[in-house]
Amino acid sequence: MKTDSILESHCSETDRLFSEILMARERVYSVGEPTPLERLPLPNVDADVWVKREDLGPIKAYKWRGAYNAMAALSPADRLKGIVAASAGNHAQGVALAAKALACQATIFMPRSTPEVKQREVLRFGGDHVEIRLIGDTYDDAGVAAREFCQSTSGVYIHPYDDFAVMGGQGTLADEVVMSGQGPFDRAYVAIGGGGLAAALACWLKRYWPEIKIYGVEGVEQASMKLAIEQGAPVELDYVDVFCDGTAVRKVGGNTFEYCNNLLDGVVTVTNNEVCHSMRTLWESIRVIPEPSGAMALAGFYQHNEVGEVAAGEKVLTIISGANMDFAQLSGISGRAGIGSNQRRYLRVPIPEGCGSLVQFLQQVPEHISIVDLQYGRVESQVQYPVIGFIGSEEDYSQLEEVLAARGASVSEVSQDEDVVYRIINYSPELFAYPLFINIEFPERAGAFLQFMNQIKDIASLCYFNYTYSGERVGRALVGMEFVSEEDQKICLERILAMSGDSIRAAREVSSDTFYRLTGTRR
Image (cartoon, rainbow, N blue to C red; front, top):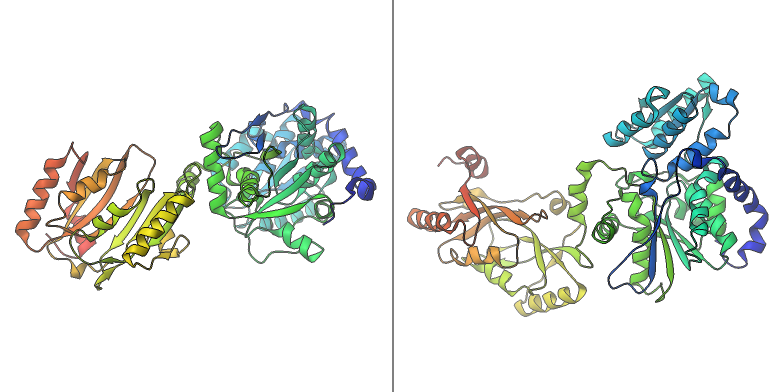
């Protein structure tokens, strides 16, 4: 990757793309307006961070620019042959928008796993001018089918990224940044899928602001551009994670690779959890919920900022590249994100068997750490190992480590363990004596659950606990308790029911059928 004297060394090879962007300026605004550039208020960040709001474009993502420019650049005769495209979503919407605007027909191949919201939007934008064909499980499967169909019908294939007219259209985003009057920027972060936007952004911004540093951002299991740069040529990945589906590309383009290799100052790889944290940050700061790939640029900035790569006062550009996401994905995202500047961690903590032992530990947790998840089931052991999800700052976690050290507890970090991610709670119901399972609802505030447990810990031992923070004002948990006698069980139940409206909002026993499924016995 080359960074010194970049304009002198590569002016000739950037001229073609630069010219394509110039010509695209004459076309793309027939179907869309420039998108805003907005300052992003970030707590505890000394840099001046801005976001380019492509989520406010006509298809809620930047892909309309390249798709329309490439199709508008065709002759009417070529458009009459039929447009063919393959896409996991956003490029498809851009092609659909262009097909309707240019009064031509488009056949778009999409993976069967494409979120319904993106399929629906393609049909909304294209109407009678578009046909969707769901093929395969990945973008690559859809791409192969689209190429074969294009050859058999003599249609015109519109590539989602490795095409100069498409790249030129994407580059109008960078032109709007320059024309905004908010520059120059010291550094910019842009998500990389196939590399079209990153190539065009770098080409345009480096021409006007030669000193700017531009970083591509990829998922750790999507890093096809990083691998290509390391290998000196595009290389196909064996596996591609699709959590950030808008950037899930197995192999970058030949043209995009050349520009990114020559113009980018580096490629940052980010985890899905870092992306989720950035999504939460965008919601909390400017009330925007991007799709996962739309938050990758900010995640890249955060990674650099945390290691001191970004100097105080630097002006930073990030791109919200899109906001087309299936609503059902939100629950998984919220579960992986931190809150504010705090991060979520899951620890498996050894707790001695016995009444009140878990409560005793929870009372020692530093007050600024929030417990957002608790997974526990009693097994045959003198020491139990509940999984507890915490949210706190690095300082909070240092205090927690001191508490654990004082207890002589050896904890395990289990945030990525499969059984924790999928909430598999192992337990041995044959060990439960006089079990009682209840659903409880308590105020979602610090100390509310401990207040409840303190009132029953003298007669009840926890044998099962399943709780996760939902973001509501109330918390809900399925709690299993066991007792030394049936009489204690009855006393405890009476206490719990009497608490409703006080330390807890509501409580009820599970149904007989649920009790049987949990314990294997009838009550």
